Amino acid sequence: MLDIQLLRTDLQQVAKRLAGRGYVLDTALFSQWESERKALQTRMQELQAQRNASSKLIGEAKRKGEDASAILAQVATLGDELKAAEQAFEAVQAKLDQWLLSIPNLPHESVPVGKDEHDNVEVRKVGVPKSFEFDVKDHVDVGAPLGLDFETGTKLSGARFTVLKGGIARLHRALAQFMLNTHTETHGYRECYTPYIVNAEVLYGTGQLPKFAEDMFKVTKGGDEQGPDQYLISTSEISLTNTVRESILKLEELPVKLTAHSPCFRSEAGSYGRDTRGMIRQHQFDKVEMVQIAHPERSMAALEEMVGHAEVILKKLELPYRVVTLCTGDMGFGSTKTYDLEVWLPAQNTYREISSCSNMGDFQARRMMARFKDENGKNQYVHTLNGSGLAVGRTLVAVLENYQNADGSVTVPAVLRPYMGGLEKLVP
RNA sequence: GGAAGCGUGGCAGAGUGGUUUAAUGCACCGGUCUUGAAAACCGGCGGGGCUUCGCGGCCCUCAAGAGUUCGAAUCUCUUCGCUUCCGCCA
Image (cartoon, rainbow, N blue to C red):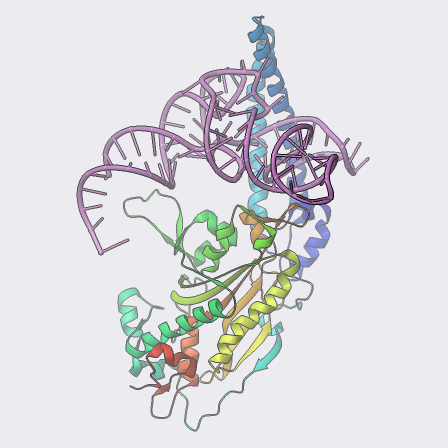
């Protein structure tokens, strides 16, 4: 959520910056609602003050045993008027709030202006794609004999669900363990285990609601169809970031660095027909997530650091990748700046997204009321950052494709062998 | 699932319709004193919002929501959470 003060003081500038990401800000609408709000709020508060004063007088009169009927008569008409004023105010305030919640974040000045993914800027390329002496297979064909089973996944749950069996299942687990251990042991993140079902208000905090409800899985408690709205998390960014909601952190508590391995559930509405083959795009996938709650002055540095943390995983796995700065038009809703990590997939002969690291600035913090007491004792919004470190399913895909051998086996990356009981190769 | 009880500011804790615009203590911050500290004393000390150049003024907030009332922490209803007991259960 943007700072409403910024909209009040510098509306045109905000509109201009949002235009860079392809968002048209309805400035006339805001100005109109804002002046309505101001008038209604002033009126309502006047009436409340009047009521409070009169009630106090009545109390005093009664205590002294005096006759209060004159004041009572005077205040009698106030009730209806006040109620009407309150309702009118709440109505316009609700409209403003909903509107504010639907506005994306302002891009940082350092973000390249652009329309879509074609305008993203490559920052660096690391590692050299290996050349194969044989025709490379994609992960579906490499994985099938090793226990990657789409057919059973579909039988159980429909399209975009997968069953992993045997060595592949273990490799998948090894990847997650390796990532989690690396982030906790060498990057200073605190391991967390969090709920996979969260309340709607939590999703307002991180920005999935109200705009992106169609991307989520909503769940219902048996026998409680009228119960509160709850959703499966689409990333553990949601639960990790919201751990600091409605709190005021001490200066010395920053930065808070959290990590978790969790499944992620995404409806993938709007991506029908895209990446239908294989496990690139699933309704359920695992991810190791990094989250930082940072001092505003430190958040951009923290973003660079976090990208580095994600890169370490790819480097240790010896997977070629590149780092890309997303342009204004391709960034996510709440981000001020985003780097994507794209891993080399030989079968597709291209780099594919495997991690996304973003600085959300105070956008989520304002929605969550997550603050810290600054150097001057003032409460300030924290900055929140999140990054995949990494998407486990896609990492599995990358390992299968990059480590495949002519005989159909897959070499286990050296760093994963301790997690595989020393196994060096997955053999059909 | 059944029964009972309880949710007040960072913590403890008063407060059962109008001197509570939430007492008091602890913690915390500033000051006096002190070589320094402790103690003592003085002052400050939750959060959100509106308004003002500023000083300030005002509104909301006692788990959440709704209601009764001129007036609600206090009364009523609903929801949520916690505690204890019983039942069931990985």
